[in-house]
Every structure is written in structure tokens, then in C-alpha cells.
Image (cartoon, rainbow, N blue to C red):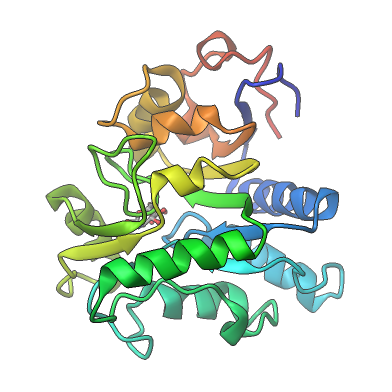
Length: 260
Ligand code: GLP
């Protein structure tokens, strides 16, 4: 990893296996450097190989259960935990259970509460009480959303309920073979995500190439919520050849793009 302070570090994996290893190495390194403060975790397809690599290391006893509080990033409004489509169920399957994190210790963001305003305030207060966010592990939506901070979302966007964009509904449909996707989400606000000391943005695939370019090399804009991630003290983008194709070091302000 090498870049000037304040610039994004962009690490390019040369294979799927390298992407998983690289993502796991980076996350583990952040945890080892600073075991304090909470870690907020995205679901979605992109982090799965990384979570599975972390789980495999845990199974081989090379990695202990993370000691930091784990925070849920987003959820569909109206889905119960027991619904396998809920993002919490997904997080539980792919991360909490394999890494032996006690699910009851997770700072939850529930999509089934009667008073969503109160749920969002409780969530923000719980994250603050846990020492704030040290690490945010995020995916990149096809329209530049992070969590469910849909465009337009500015840097002060609060934790809130949001209507999902048609683009997000379409892209989320692939998770359940076309089953109906909820039309609202509840999400940690972009403002909260920008309070993290470190953001690890996981981006893979040619279909993310253009939005990755706009996120890291374009102007900051509420139309591309991920474009604000460059404001955090340390932004590490773990990507692959397909997503990074055509990006130059100059465009992201790095001296070079390490390829692993
Ligand atoms: C979803 C989720 C995000 C996720 C993103 C990318 O809508 N709300 O948390 O990071 O879209 O998903 P994927 O990694 O499957 O492309």
C-alpha cells in the first residue's frame, strides 16, 4: 500500500482469490492496528468472498473473533430477521456465525420498528457509545450509493429511512432470483460513515468500472454519494482488474496502483 496522505489507496487484485485475500488482509490489518471503535459492515455480493476468507482464517485459528463492536449498515424496511432476505440474516450467515460473533452484541438497525425516527436516533447513539466508527467496510451501489444512501445524498445525510431507487431495486433483485424487493431501506447516514477513521471500499466487476471512476476520480456530488468517501482520513479501495481498468494513478492522486 502506498499513497500520499489524504489520497485514496487503491489496491487492485489480479484474481478473485487475490481479491478475497487482499480484502481480508486489509480488514485484519485495520483491526490489528486499532482494536477500538466499532466496525460497520456492508452485505451485498461483493464482500462475501472477503468474509469467507476471514471465516476460513478463523476456522484455521489464524484469526480470532473480532473484539470490536460490530454495526449493521442497512436493512430493508419491513423484513423480519427471520426472513432470509433481510440484510441482518445475510450478515449473520456470512460473518457473525462463521466468525463466532454474538449476534446479540451487534448494534442493529431494524427495519421493523414502528418509530423509525427513534430507531435511527437510538442507532446513532449506540454507535457513539461504542466509541464511534473506526472502520467502515462498504460496497458500492451501481448508482454510487453506499449503504442505502441513495443519490442524492450529501455528506451530512442522516441515518434514516429512504425510498429505494429503481436502479437499486433492480440490482437487489438479483439477490433473490427476481423475488419482490422491498421499496424502502433504512441506512446508516453518509454523515456517520464519513466519521469513520478508515473506510475499506470493496468494488469488483466490470459493471462497477464507471461508477468507481466517478466515485474516486470525479467531483464530489450528492449524485454520487460514494464520491464523499475521499473525505475520511484513510480510504482503502480494494478492487479487481475489471473494475479498475483504465484508472490512472493521477486520477486518484496516488503515486502508483499496486496490483496484487
Ligand atoms: C446494496 C446494499 C449495499 C451494497 C451495495 C452493493 O443495495 N444496500 O450495502 O454495498 O448495494 O451490492 P453488491 O456488492 O451486491 O454489488
